[in-house]
Image (tube, rainbow, N blue to C red; front, side):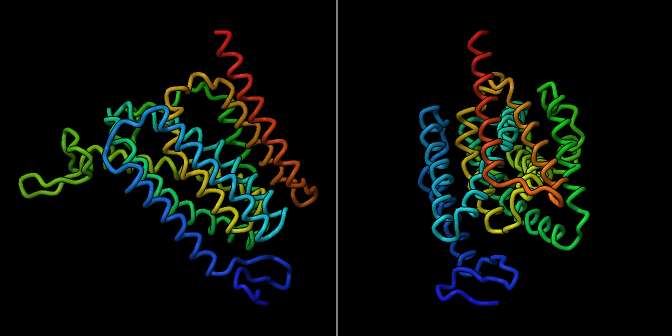
Length: 320
């Protein structure tokens, strides 16, 4: 291996780029700073997030995620940049289901609006850690087991079918076995204790319903990751690009939740659009040994499908 003089990346004999630990450390530090700023400065005091506030935060997070495409382009090349923005769009679009699921969970557990932002902060922090494990594990499997691409492709096609035929009814928390098990196993207070996750009652440490909600959010993200990580791995196996596109797509979900949580019924064709995208990347996985679909073709396809799904949804909503 040859080490670039600027210590930015390592280049293997095969031409594959391996990002230097210095870059990994700097990127993780940058993500950490964004999280701290968001928690300590933006949301110093628990309060209900207004639509205007959520729109501003969403615009900032999306701008950061999109502008990072330029960083990848300058640092590596246009191919890597197109892989990043394609992966970012896939993760962002698939994360819409997370947003609507959170709305269902918060409604079921009657989480006060002023505490929801804190729950999402720690939920997303945990999601970043778990996604990293899925990403590196998935890439390791793809690099070591040739036939695993067909498994990933089959998962994506099955998920696409499941989403396409879904009636948008979502989950029913009162009938969910995981929620019932958590409520049974954890000694929990009957009501919320401000924004605390743990309290001491009669010398015994107990969790509050807020902590239970975080656990459920983390568990559901594992399920979503099983769908979304194979989708982006069909675009690239560059660990840094996969993780960074995931990270920036996830970081902005808190603000996006407060902006779109009440608008689920307006996006009537979103599920169909997501299903088509997943079906496309699933097929791309399955035929990758014989047919190489250019990155820009994938990017254009995803943009067109998302735009069409949103346009048809808003048009349908306007008629109603």
